[in-house]
Image 1 (cartoon, rainbow, N blue to C red):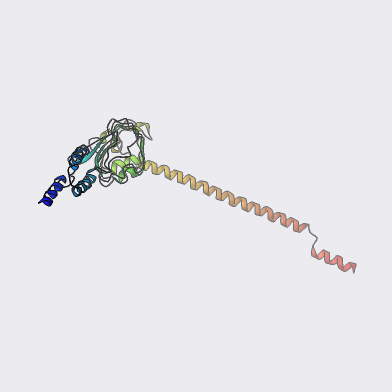
Image 2 (cartoon, helix red, strand yellow):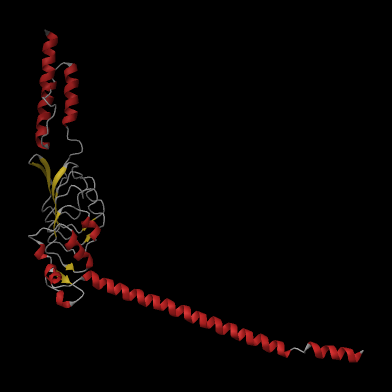
Length: 287
């Protein structure tokens, strides 16, 4: 009878799933309740309850001090909007699904910035001061990311490798874009948000007439920035090859001329020597 009562007390300490999927604040509240119960519990039950407490502690899920962690539809949401951040926090929980970093002062997205966030689906980086995005900035989240907002930053150009590997819907509006081939390829191949594509405007361009116009409008007019770049590369290649060819011709001419001069000098030297026949006659007369 005593043993059965002891088992009941031990079981009462352990929730049905030991520690359900709850937010950080609720977990800490439960910890306080469990500690109060431990004082009146046999040793075996105390050990079981202590083990459960270890499971309930949110190891690796701590929230960055400048952010707020909550749940949205049963998934972890990390809210870091308007926190005066100048770089991406390093301690974002690994189970984050929604991450809002908008309205800060972030200037760069380095390589592997989100690599540990394998569950990330929505990423908001709008209204920052982003100027540079590394090629491997979104490595590790490319497969699962559904939405990426880079609008209202200071991005002039972006490596196409950073975006073309994504399956996410992209928002790139209201940036001072330099219209070039890489941006054109992104527009053709990436999944852009149709509601914001008209706001991708040429801040600078190879020709002044394109400045201030939506990129989509310029491309619809028949402009192909990639063909312009190809022609430029072809001209540069032709000039380089012509330069090398000219150097080879000049070298051959100098080489032939130098050999001809050496040959003439050698012939003149041989003519200046006394002939073998004359030397032989002189010798026979003397005898």
